[in-house]
Image (tube, rainbow, N blue to C red; front, side):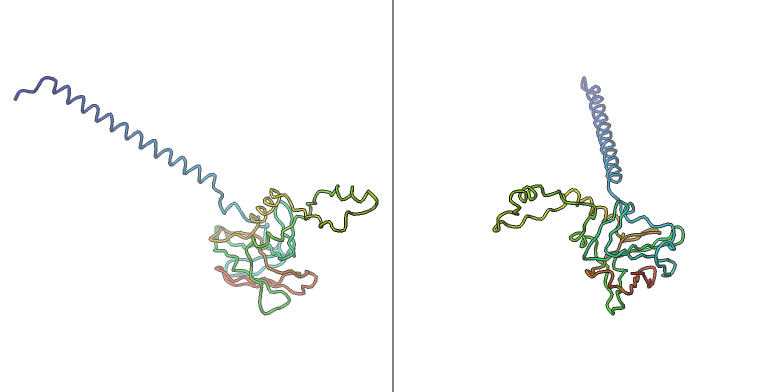
Amino acid sequence: MRVPAGYASLKTGMRTGFLTIVVLIGALCARTQGQDAQNQGAARKDAPTNESRGMPPRAAPAEYQAQAQAGMVTVAAEFMGHAVPTPDGTYSTEDYVVVEAALFGSPEARTRLSKGDFSLRINGKKMALPSQPYELAFKSLKDPEWEPPSKTDSKSKTSFGGGGGNAGDPPPAPVHMPIELRHAMEQRVQRASMLEGDRALPQAGLLFFEYRGKTQGIRSLELIYSGAAGNAVLALHP
């Protein structure tokens, strides 16, 4: 059978072109996979992890007001009253009282944490107060060190004739903390609150309990823990 002229060169060219396309597709797939892996690695690096949050635990359970054993875990706690301590500053809330709690265990020990594991009995009442989400305290959260700007306008008004404005004038609008300062304060409280989920020990954080009364009226306090590690009751100092 006679092969037409130019057939061999045409066949060779087709094979070469096909191999070139395969190589280009392979290189494109490898590049795409590399970019995906790089993007995923960057996302994991940039994404905030829960392990980086939480109040740093103290050196030992003995550094807290009270300690109790729950199975293989030591629960320690200290009553903070209406103060909200964080590593970056201390704030206050009129609607909640705060307990700084911590759980300690053997090296490499872990346990599952939940805010629902904790409750607070005040003055021996039958019903203990359940721990509340930290976000609920934001509404009454205050920074004692922040002061609103001085009201120069009101001072200038009183300087004329000793009067304080017309009788029909509306009261001055309340001055609120700038939104960026409030947001920073809330983020600090969030980072200091007790973490949840499966956690390596030791772990520490703030617990919030709704209580609008004055701490001077508190005669007795019991922090009740009932969680994955076991059960414990800690007598705290008001």
